[in-house]
Image (spheres, rainbow, N blue to C red):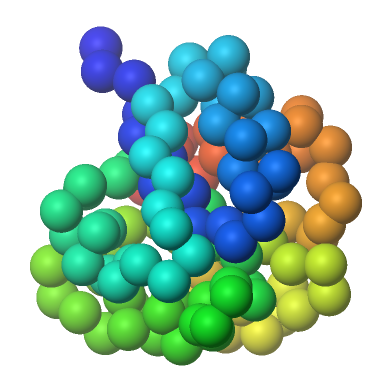
Length: 121
């Protein structure tokens, strides 16, 4: 069985490094994006099982990107987990997120929400 692919949209290089290490140890394939990437296009190209995206990226709004993804036919069904240091869970869910993680979060919280999202129909 293929490893589930996680697309990582996070602008903190330390966080990217930690997440890549953790997710690979947990059996995920990880693709990390540059902070200013065209995230919908990379999502289309990479076809991830889950997009793990920060709400506040360097020069982009994760919520705007989520809106773009949810309104684009070929990628709207990609599961998206949002994360932020601010508790914007309700706003993320209204925009169509499949889950939300409040930073700082524990590794097991991340793995639990990823596995739950993958198993949800």
